[in-house]
Amino acid sequence: MQLTFFTTSHCHLCELAENLLVHTPMPQPIPVEAVDIATSQELVDRYGTRIPVLRREDTGAELGWPFSRDDLLDFLGPQPRSSGHIH
Image (cartoon, rainbow, N blue to C red; front, side, top):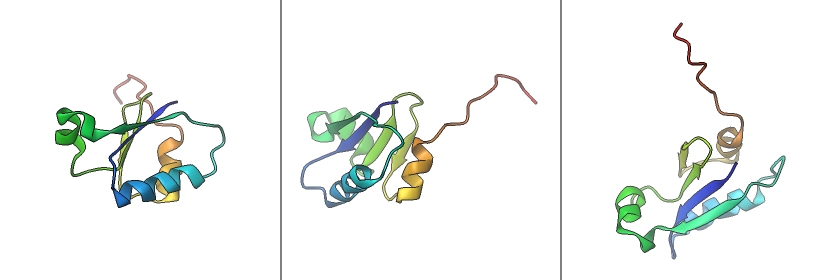
């Protein structure tokens, strides 16, 4: 699993989210790529009012602020997968 952390400079909420991410014990290390949305107008349009946002690259799932430690751990846990069968 890899995470993308959408952030920007001088963002107090982003600092809170980063602190939570850094100080939450993980069962295994998870690579995190920080992306400053100011580098792309498309990212500003998509995330400008939502940052900080974490995205799982394996599933595309996103977790937007505000989130708690428990929310973060749930987000990082196994994601339900579709069996492909209609019940």
